[in-house]
Length: 279
Image (cartoon, rainbow, N blue to C red; front, side, top):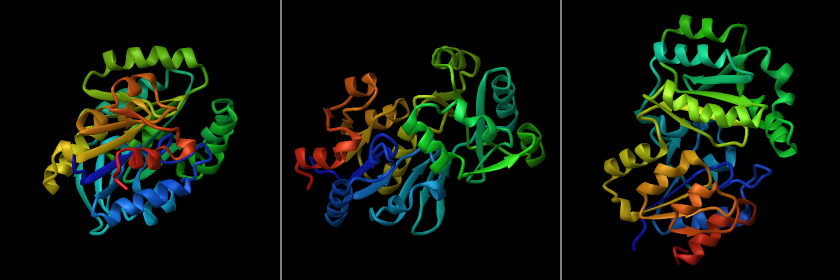
């Protein structure tokens, strides 16, 4: 099987638990790029907040962002496709979030927005050491504060790229994963972190974004390899001819994968590319 494109999640897949890229992963992906294989990061993050090495060291031109809400061509500085939540629906989601014991934020215009109270309470929702480190090294550093997020969205009067909640009660998070698809069947409910839920337009999934990019490039599913660990990676992996789950992946991701590789802390992407003799 000739692979022409490799797509991969970031957190829990490309990045180790310290949010660094294992050196073997960089070497392996660069070697694949030298063999004319397209390297496509696929993340819940927006492009500007992806780690600098992801943007500059992997020879990647195309990026799937906000869980598939956008496909970005960094070489041409062009958005190739976009799918966002209409404002009226976003406000309904927001009103539901306000009834819960959660922290919440949203993405608009490639910026993360939250309320000024977020930082004061955040440590209570990120108690696990690695998650707390991510809170202070990334989440708190990549947001714009506003006194009233709902009023901000109304004044802006435009669609929303992604909405997100962080829970301190794991059981409530599980309950909301059941409830939200019933309340908002037209939206995609997913998760990428142990304490979060992410909400996107129904057209905004990594799999749909990857399919759109492949159609544009004339690449078939059998020519795609996809890596992931979280539920928001599932349809991307189902699209790909070869799907690779990390050892640390959600059980459902493992069940649906062609192959289970080493963990994100053990350069699992590099190990899989070696296994399949891509490099």
